[in-house]
Length: 79
Image 1 (tube, rainbow, N blue to C red):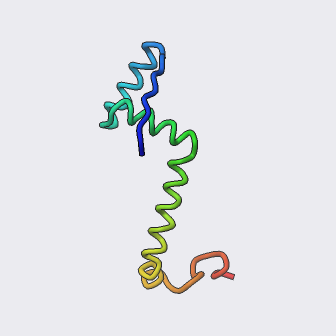
Image 2: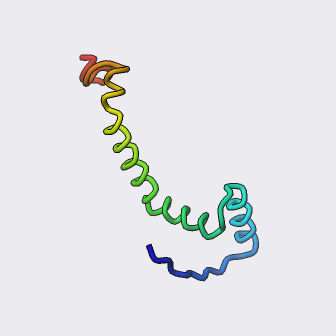
């Protein structure tokens, strides 16, 4: 994906907090801000749900072997 430069003015306290938070997470301030915007727009949550669904699809048979057949342990399976 192409990157676009975005210049933002913030007060020194906000800039310091952004630098400290990014450093604590081992990432650049740019990446930190990018992730905050993604979280705010729901992109991270959507990506997580897609990844979780792919994981479950890939390992469905393993879970079924380990924990029983379809619907077992769900509300439908307990009725």
